Amino acid sequence: MAGSLPLLPQRQAILLSEFLKVLLEAFDREKLRTCVLRNYQGFPDTNVGNDIDFLISPSDLPRAIRALRSLPGIRIVGYEERHYVANVFMEGISLATKASEIQIDFYLRLAWKGMQYLSSDAVLEAAVPYHAGSLSLFVPAPIHEAIISLFGSLLIGGRLKEKYFPSVQRIFADNSSMVITALAPHFGPKAATQLVDSVLSGDRRKIANCISPLRTALTLRSLLRRPVRSTVAIARHYTREFVLRYSVKSIESVRILGPDGCGKAKIIDALMPMLQSMAVVVERRPFKPRFSFGRSLRDKTADSASHAEAPGGDASMGMIVMWLVEEWLDLIFGKLNLKLCVCEGCYQDMLIDRRRYRYGGPMWFAHLVGRLYPSPDLWVLLDTPAETMVSRNQELPPAEAVRQLEAYRAFVKTRKRYVILDARQSIDCITENAYAAIIDTLAQRADRKLKRRF
Image (cartoon, rainbow, N blue to C red; front, side, top):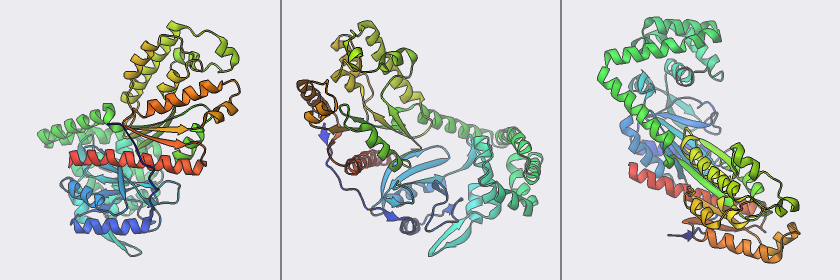
């Protein structure tokens, strides 16, 4: 059912300290056993990292999500789940940046490719209390925290994260034998000792040379000691990764459209800092082809001379087919995680202003291709009076300006979710209304996803 979204007032964000307080209280009500894996040193007023990482038992995930959904004034706007971690994106928290969203990661397993490199139960059992102002939480024992901080980038990402290395090196130096004991069951004494010696030496090349032996040792020991369980865990890991990477359900898109001169670029410039923590990847993309064939046609200057040229029918038909192919390729293969894509313009721009986009083929073909385009989650139309369009483009006849505006309004009103904003308002006002519409759309989509999952 098509419907316009009401212009919602922007929610009042709560301070990080208050958010952490009610979050931990919600965990206590659910009787959750958690520990904050790292970057808790700035609590309660500052979040040192880009997100907050909690370790929980896999069976506790439904209760953890229930606790998050119970928080007053906070909305879940994104959810993504892998075999070893669940990423939750929440809006309504006042941070130092323009964004009011924060990412909460629930680590379910400390694993690489489905194979556990450290026992989650052992980490939770050995967790120690930590006090940050009025907050009381649990954090890993120093040895466990050092291993997790090192392996989070080294074993999984294949690189050393310098941010954590001084602390890791210090803890390894003070507890080298205990670190080897903790790692030996999963990697064997030889690989564990080699890693500890490399970290103590500080030689980055030696540390990098440990990655392949560690992965090999972990794989062999896991398959030899627990062949069935490890095989199933590996299969689950790759199945989940395949679904996330190639399913269109893990991409969210917003298209901002309107006639030339309505301020689309300025609005997106203002929105991007506010949306930076809304998903794992937040991308801004102009609506134009990236292949050389389409680009040569689309990027011609839209001056009076180019308008006077007769656009080629076959070439322009090829251009829009290229656009369609690129759109689906980007949708399916252009992501690795939950992604929010904010697009400037849309395919409808070309149908409304054929001369500017140099389309000279039959309109029935253009409309047919348009039906095959993936539909975004939200349309934002920047509406402006016809006289404003004419004042900004003296070559545009008033009748043509009226026609284009009516075409935009008629098109957007056939969409499932849309909002029409007055482009005459201030940038701040337009941005706030667009942001509120995006938040509401993503929150409703996340709510449906969580209801199906839990």
